Image 1: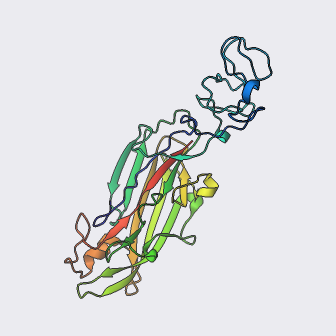
Image 2: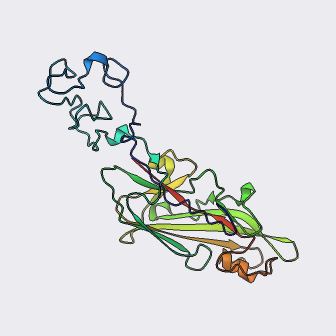
Image 3: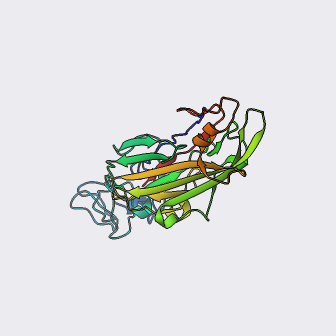
Length: 289
């Protein structure tokens, strides 16, 4: 919900492994259909037919992945591929978004402020990966909310939405930058044009940068996000700062500090909860498989 500063916590959401939900798309077997192929595929217990027409000494495991056919959600696993507890290999799964928070039993610790010097810090610790192959954090992924910053009311025009800045970003070293154009509503009812900038950095629990990448490179079909990072450990930290610049000072200033210094219709003091005409949305979603 956007109100005043409207920081959309879009907080981390993460996905249940599609295999566990039975959502993987198994290849058709010799007989087509369910991946087992009609009467050619063994799915029984002791003495039931196996895939080659013989019988099994125990529960059948047609694809030889170590998971019995009776509980295997992904028949036809490639020979030798590592599988999760329900018999699905990485290649048989599709990344899914998680709608719950916090995921994986992690602890989320916020700190700082998106519009003040030093920025906002989100720390995620204690991620329990279980048998997941991948976890991704995707930026600005909720299609229901416009991601951007505005100092003259709601984020309601396309120019106020964040746009990726290739010039300012350093994706391999965990730096992702977006820019926009907006304005500030002054006390005399005029609007002063502004440029906006969101700078994000992501590191692991040793403070080593985690590379950002576009979602196609990550192999994630996201809802709305275009960039993100793969989280390979059990903890990470994101810092973010939103600044604005006008044509008078040509200086980037944290957006709430800038608002405080301006003569605006609501006394010019953004205060701890933001000014009445400052709106910002920012967040991320978790995906996994």
